Image 1 (cartoon, one colour):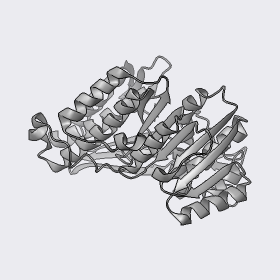
Image 2: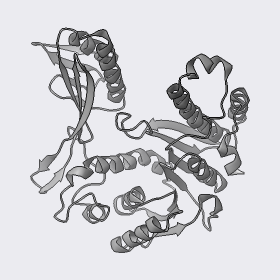
Image 3: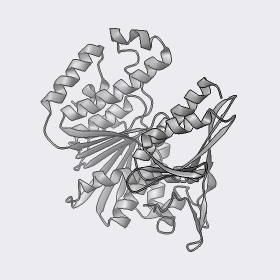
Length: 371
């Protein structure tokens, strides 16, 4: 295999190293991750222990000896298949479905992992949002969606733990769309945690708002309300504890973050979508030899946009973390910004933010939204 394709294969494998670090997973048939966070590699008649960071280099070195390499990586019910040949490197997906013989439901598994929103327990909900068939089986074309919504709840658990002493939790969903994740989070809070909660969904589309209202009625969720409105125009009439915004386009994410700040929400969670605002604004002389390439300029703008959002939230008193929501192999728009209010303000973060804004010659939309 030529060096160019070896390098491309190594890039995919380096991404897998990071995914091993994020939790216990298996690399079927050849590599397993043990309880000491080391990899056990059973290959070519011998077993050896290796470090996670060695995986990509070892497999890349072995690939040089062969004309073709096929790698199957199983994650959250999906097989990610990397095929490297003399002609190039390709990636494809296959749904990994196993039959649960005791419950007679089709579910997807990774090792012994248990889903939070379980088939059987949440059938009415999963049928209403289109995950299950009428006879209670996961639809083949919805397995990935099922994994995503369950992973969303998994990522929200730490946020909800921060509000454990709240008698009632009120969640505001900005740009709610069909509200799938809102309905799933409602089920988790109300049916699994037995926690009193209230949900408010906002969207400018009358069609999706009416659809969400019908779904709430069908499920008997009287603790949900939906409003057709612009996020900027909405003024809450009750305390807001969590603000979520998932795949809101461009500055709509900033509108949601701003609403969360104005409402003094304890937690703000956003998964941004497209980024256009800073692309035409930022100008930094040392970057010019790199960002003369359009694709790199756009990617840099994405990083700067979310980085400045996180830093501004820190300046406003939030503890901020950024994590991968779904695999970057599925979409590059996969980052989740999680912010927990911990103090009134952070002067050091504000100074850093102001310095960067001036250095980059930009005027981020979030500043205009929270005032």
